[in-house]
Image (cartoon, rainbow, N blue to C red):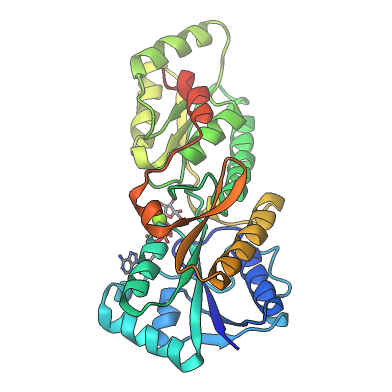
Length: 320
Ligand SMILES: Nc1ncnc2c1ncn2[C@@H]1O[C@H](COP(=O)(O)OP(=O)(O)OP(=O)(O)O)[C@@H](O)[C@H]1O
Ligand SMILES: O=P(O)(O)OC[C@H]1O[C@](O)(CO)[C@@H](O)[C@@H]1O
Ligand SMILES: [Mg+2]
């Protein structure tokens, strides 16, 4: 039986566990022998790999994070350790890989393919939603719901005082989480890398609102702008409102996957196994304009992330 190994790599994301479960179950149904690699690239180098049964992956789909665990391995950049990883796969008869992770993890597996010709299929999973070619990455919906709950709670306390709150969301260099959260929570300000902002205009708009009775302000700031602390001081001074900063941090990465993340995980996993069975060697599963598909890693690597233009438009008035 042909061996197929499944791993999670890079930042964990809700949806990784249902993706692992589905990849194992579907591989077995297709006559493959699934293996699980623990701790991502670290486990591949150190041979932390074991055969998987359906029982091994039962009862995991509702859990957040990744039961396989993850890593960011410095050693994988070195050929010597990639060779060690290859030898581990060879010993077990594994000649197909599924990697559930972000762009860095795909780059790692593509390098591994260039070195040793082991085909892989990538499943986009990162709350940042920053993988080119796909509108959706696993974990994003769960993260957005986490953020919504947190911002709604902050709104409760903000409106109990005359206060402003600046809330920083994750997303590395991508403002998707911040933009969708600003819209879904009714924020007054949104600062993201994708949009220019005009603090003078924001000041004029909100001073008028305050004259007309506004007593609280919510500002959502993407981590990639590095603006959260500055904006907190700016609101205090320029809008004369007591202002608190909340950095949501890793709470956004946890939590039980939403229904959407579970269903997307199943779709991506089945597509990944099918892609390998069809003989494709280095495809990334994507979801674009409501359709499931697959792109060559080269296309993904050479493209730019394109966020939903309607979301960007809808946020425009929150930046001035
Ligand atoms: N060019 C490369 N060659 C070899 N290994 C690489 C390469 N690029 C990335 N890697 C490996 O892939 C790991 C995961 O990449 P990275 O830390 O960027 O996370 P990611 O998969 O992009 O997920 P996220 O952005 O959601 O955290 C890195 O820690 C490194 O071990
Ligand atoms: O603290 P860590 O796990 O290194 O990663 C933090 C980064 O990971 C991400 O959450 C993506 O998983 C980014 O938004 C953030 O910048
Ligand atoms: Mg990444």
